[in-house]
Length: 165
Image (cartoon, rainbow, N blue to C red):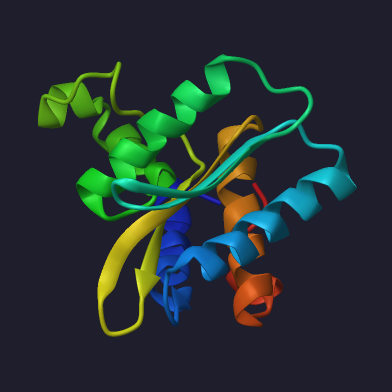
């Protein structure tokens, strides 16, 4: 799959995976779903679910390092700035052959375009937060969030997942 095809698929994911609400209960459900998936698969990840400016769920699994929370912070900043997944922003920058510093003037110490930050859209409201994973290769970070959102929303992950590389 090419970058353009992945971007089209991510746009579909972002449109289709709308939450009915984002409150502490929904954040807990989404966060614990991702945590359970990570435990079952033996994944060392950090998981963060938040409304912009308000952390609602956070966990660090065995095998993570002090760098993972920093990656989560930078991915969250990217989602909050663009209301789009950090992976999509990274793919767009890759197509341009430039970084967000070059195109937007954003400090790479505060923003990153690696996969794993996903916008949380609420029906009738828009993007209000993010769900973020750090610890896996960036495409896998992104897909862990998407798969968990599918589980929480009762959607078929096979219909929305990225096409294998």
